[in-house]
Amino acid sequence: MKQHSLRPLFTSEEIQQKTRALARKISADYRDGHIIVIGVLKGSFVFLADIIRHLTLETTIDFVQISSYGSFRHSTGSCTLKKDVGVDIAGRDVLVVEDIIDTGETLHFLLRELRKRNPASLKVCSLVDKPSSRTKIIPVDYFGFTVGDNFIVGFGLDYDERYRSLPGIYALED
Ligand code: 5GP
Ligand code: MG
Image 1 (cartoon, rainbow, N blue to C red):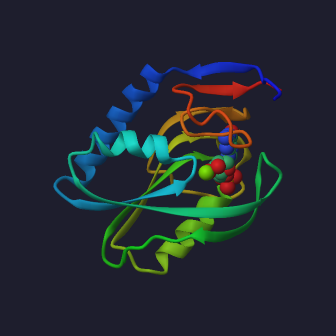
Image 2: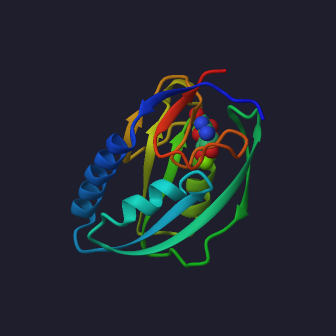
Image 3: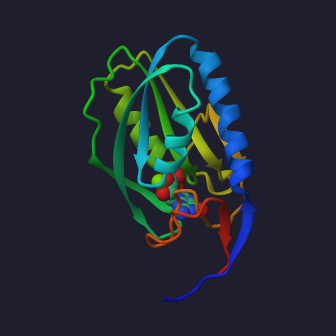
């Protein structure tokens, strides 16, 4: 299998620190609430697993999976819901957890779908924000890191299903 060169961007310690800070902020914002946390599969599962363990809130956890079309690097906007949540979100506080927001097309589609179900509130928490190739305006309520136009892997993020289990985040060099 081809070995890519991986340039370290964020260490496991930096990610943990950031995750704890985000969880503190989220816990304070919702105070003693009960939120529905929706992870976007597959990339967000590592970040989600870490962040929920630092929340001082009651949580219901569920997942969606979205197919998006385009090149491996960027979505083009035609998205479909491949797996839906199994809970009713009407009247509930919902927090969507993503690994990375790139063009914004995936989240734009998902937020539109979820809004139709009348949640009491709908916010977004993404580990990484990559604002340079945004084609849709997405209100990102919480994010950990900002990256430039790199393709990144590790901590849940893959390249062709590889590298998800790396504890840090790396830029794929070629
Ligand atoms: P968007 O729809 O915002 O363009 O892309 C969102 C999805 O594309 C992310 O959830 C992620 O799965 C994938 N993606 C975008 N940029 C990257 C990246 O740098 N690395 C990886 N591994 N996936 C990415
Ligand atoms: Mg994703």
